[in-house]
Image (cartoon, rainbow, N blue to C red; front, side, top):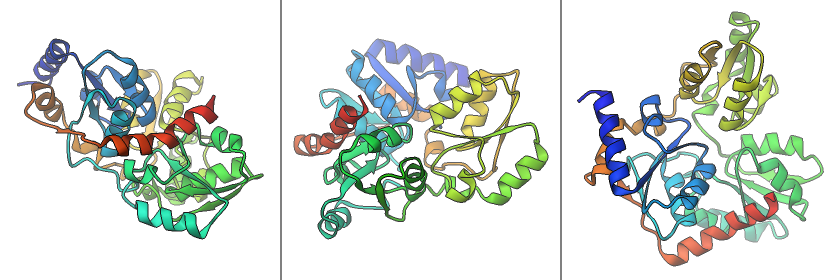
Length: 305
């Protein structure tokens, strides 16, 4: 089968079986073209809750599929490739953070969305990279324990200096591959280009960026800006997607090594087998886990209004 044959069959099967396909922004272009919705993890979960589909397939990583199930417990949710995890989400566990809460009374525990459902059960508020600043500003408490990404936490702390934000060492190994040397080389090679960067990058290079934002915000900025050249400092799949969206503009990766192996694990064949009923992994969660982990997400929605 060709890519086009596979895509046509996936589209036919998803319509026949009332399936909604979600693709995170870091998925390949071939998967984007069969997805019903594309975006950041939490935005996709919200879309899944709105649609009438009985089954939802997440083309992303495990914590994203868990979030879909938390917000849509009545739906059947599949992770297209069962081995697609998130190293950041696995860096901390429930017992560690529960102990930190005991050791740091009076702190509000803020969890980045890139955490497991189990870890969310002991957190007070959840945030995304695009909503973190607003939500932390809206938290009545001025003492914050931010987990697990200390790089995103450092960026947020600079935007909200009035809060005391304690960080725990953790982060995205993919974004940490980019260095100050990469930025210096990009400036030399592409002097007219703006550098668009994700806040999961190390603070030493975030300070050198022209624009800092979530994946969705980076793409929106590049599409709307009048500039013609951009260096993209996030997962390299975004370079390709922007090339498709804006063929009249030029996009360059900050580093050839900024590739998330977990995101790239999902293939079009995985999606095909999942819609066919012979692949993927159904996300099974107890009612207690869904209820407990949803509390910090609901608090995020409340504070974000």
